[in-house]
Image 1: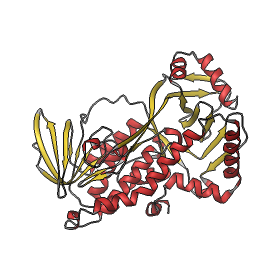
Image 2 (image 1 turned 30 degrees about the vertical axis):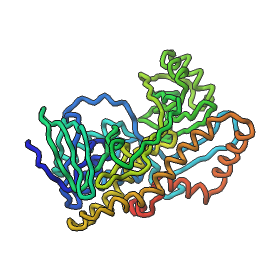
Image 3 (image 1 turned 180 degrees about the vertical axis):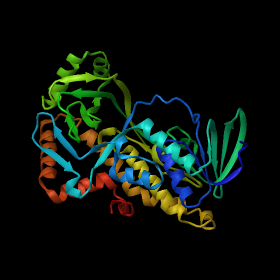
Image 4 (image 1 turned 30 degrees about the horizontal axis):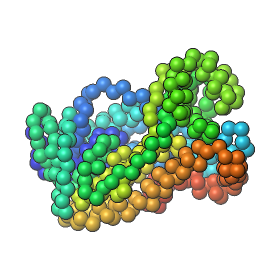
Amino acid sequence: MQPLSHYPFIIIGAGPVGMLAALMLQQQGKPVLLLEARAVDSHLTDQRTLALSYHSIQAFRQAGVNLPDDIFTFIQEVHVSRQQHFGRVLLTAKEINLPYLGATIDYVRLLRACEKALQKYRVPVQWQTTVKQIHSTAHWASIQCVYQQRQHVLTAQWLILAEGGNLAASLPDIRVRSHDYRQQALVNTLRFESSNQAVAYERFTRNGPLALLPYGDDFRLVWTCTPEEAQQRLRQDIYAFNQQLQAVLGSRFGQLRQMGEPTTFPLRLRQLNQVYSQRVICIGNAAQTMHPVAAQGLNLGVRDAETLNKIFGMADIKALNNATLAREYAQARAYDAHAVVGFTHILVQLFDHAHSGLEYVQSLGMGILGALPALRYRFTKQLVFGLNQHSNHLAK
């Protein structure tokens, strides 16, 4: 198709957050165009497994994404502990009156479900479009892109960046803050003698956290390692790998019976100093990426899309000309986004130090959180729903 030249909303990036934002705006009757570099029928090899909170699952479903229960592995409890130290925290769905805290799903399955929703609700998507440059003024935003081997210029009242690239860094007043943890996440699927019983485990070790997420009858491992440890563990056979796992986890799951093909990825924190520049707004991975320790990355992006829809989707066409909407969005997201990113970063830094006095304080803090129901209730609710009060309607 020959693209039009102007839209009220253009969203760049057809990942889960970009597609969710497009579906939500379409539901509100707002004309939107979604741009994506890959082809609609491209073969996807992404092996990531996502941990969606209860709140995020409901958000996708309410936006029209068909997510039946049988494509999830639900998480009823989260068990948090420290290697060779006292203090543990048990977070349960029952305690906050939910059927589950969250669930795991393969990234590709969520992506395909969102794509089907785009087709069902006729959200315009321009696939195989490479965005080369963006520009923003006080009244509109423009895009230079390549589509069907031809250069095109598109304009929009509002441009929403939901991609994980570097487009935002080219905008005035936006700076990228980054931190390299100098660690890698080793990811694999593991089968033990014991099944997961719908419990997720997070264990903090001296070299970083290790998470085991329910995944069918198995577990999905996310193990924070030094680069040297990651390379060593990639080459280990099942016997040697099981020995290292039991040194960290003990023998609660029995012997490791089977493991898949491991993969690794580097761990970095990336956050913008501000999430808008005139008529451009950044959401999801365009605004922040973080350590997977608390499984909050995509869930934070879902809440970005919800807030965007709350502010822009409910505005009439004339109100969309109001340039202050971008600042209103940024103010609405600031507390939740900065708190979650900050909490995740501090958590990694805090448990990455082996000083004996600090270790005692760490264990004491976990013990207090685990022992006080009111504090634990509030902490669990915030992990599931975030810190924005307007999001809590989905819990009802």
